[in-house]
Image (cartoon, rainbow, N blue to C red; front, side, top):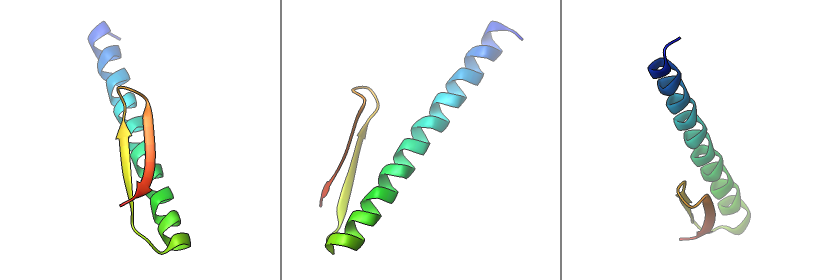
Length: 56
């Protein structure tokens, strides 16, 4: 496998993981809304490795 192919595969895997983090955070926000009866907002910053779920 070429270096470029390995790089592309690594990038694709990272994007998949990033998407998974965002989906899981949104699921958490939905659960919080069900418990508290208020809408919640998801903030994800992959550069600073920061995820938060707060009331909207």
